[in-house]
Length: 175
Image (cartoon, rainbow, N blue to C red; front, side, top):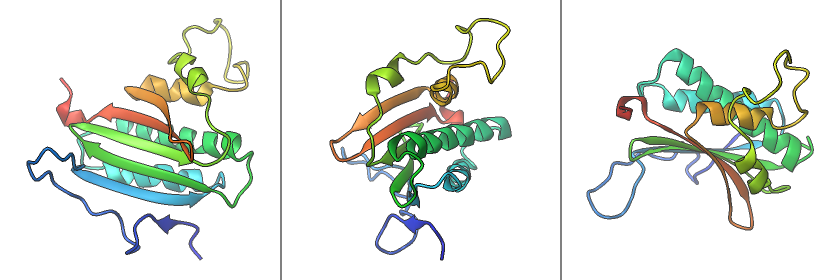
């Protein structure tokens, strides 16, 4: 049996919608999937978002970077929210709206520390020179990577779930 579930009742991807010109905001393109909290599912989730982004104007390198960010966010949810315990829900949503890709990786386990995510710098330039990947701090590398690639990396919480929101302007929309 496939480990993934589609988010809508019909069992297919959320239908792409086009704005009807009203004040109601409707994503131009959207999709959502629910995965089991297994590390192995991170590859599938990341690959799905990459496929969702195909044709939006990004280079192969940029698509790979977006895929890496989704992978890192998913692994963070499994490792930190669920302590590597399978059987829990990780929801990945992707939407294109107002010239921007927004990806959310949501979980119902241990909430992300919004202040810690906000305080984590982008990139690795602030670390002492001469370090290799194994000398880095034990946590926070994924958030550093995400912040280096995406224009937004922040925590959203509604009391029931916690999401890592990542956003990036659509390639064709960038100056």
